[in-house]
Length: 624
Image (cartoon, rainbow, N blue to C red; front, side):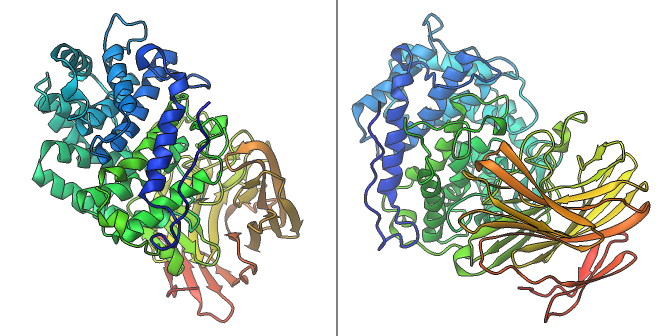
């Protein structure tokens, strides 16, 4: 068994928010690298970590275990100028030679069209580039030719039309720099392809459609910027730097005061890989953040997971968020997949004397004041509250529509109305959180599968969906910690309308309560999920589940219902809240006049929302 994780004492002078320094990052990196050693195959060609195999099988998974931990090792080696224990270099040099030897019993799979090893080849190529003076250049000529021959299998290969095109770009760029086979047209083609997916304000969709998630940062920004760093292409480097700067202006808000990232999108088992774009900004000089803020946010995320059992008692990263959570992983994920989190350690490439490591930590925006950030490009509206440190993301744009299964349930990681840093969606049959559903008398449920973005502005966003005979236009108005949802529902008479709040989960069942048209769930630490009917609803309740949520085995979701829609079009208004504050906000007075809804907060100015045509709102000001 590996040694227990031992980190240096906190340094409150340098890091007054987190206490973490570069030594903490190095210590955790070393612990992760040491802990996978017992699972290595002969000659370290693969790391076959415990857990269920992915759809690609154990050989590909073993390569994944090698490649992704090699990327972590590379950041550690290069960041130390090669001054690491010789065993670390020997381990990965030996694994490279063994894995690329077709005659070895644990040889890596050949690179084939659309195959998972293409992904892992990119990590190998990046790691070889960063460690070249200490690793690749010290291999014999025959060994170098063997490594190049395996990587060259990427030339001419087909990839999915998404972030995978960038794996070809970085692999062939490394081949170019070592004089190996490569196709300059494939490098240029991959870089040009992502231009079709750039939607402005620093945001990329991961392929065609509205695929907005963490891949925008840890893939769509990361690989082009690292490619520019490899190739020396200053023109593209400047382009990517400007986009990254705009992205980080918004992205810095995605992390709670305690370091928890907003829980949205696929591949969440990569956990602290979410901070890779922050370090990328510092590495490339593109960041709009002060260096001390970059470290405060990034260290906050790493400390958040380290304080919640990540890595586990074996020193391993598992397929989950805190604990193992099989429902939350995708079928392409295997035991080595969580080590994509190695990208979080990109900051170790910065020299120890870089201001990101030496400047005192600076407050994140959430440390200073409440935040509301409108993001029209992905169709999101983010609001965060200083009092409880919670971040909430209202979703009126990202649905991953191109790959949604029309016969299956809507993807819970993309189609919920809201996501937060402190909750995750329930996963499984019968879940109701974060959605406006319309249920026929026969039990057929109409849900949004394809989002029609309509508007995003200051404290306001709107979208629509159509599912058969049902059409729903939803507007969200932000008031502090609260989201006020306004739904215009068009449906046959007698259908039930149901609005689900946030699924609150923990190690123990949350306390629940419901009366008339409000319901809540509350954890022992005071975190509360509440829904309150303001117009149109007739009843409320709380749905409970077990084993459905990444944040804990017990979850509870407050919800509202209207038992019988009158037919035609009607408006429903609710207040949806997730808060750790002691006091719940007062409800606004609501007046509905056709498609015009007026909200009058206690002691505040009226807010008028119009749902006809392109929805808009007047009188929002700055709110609470």
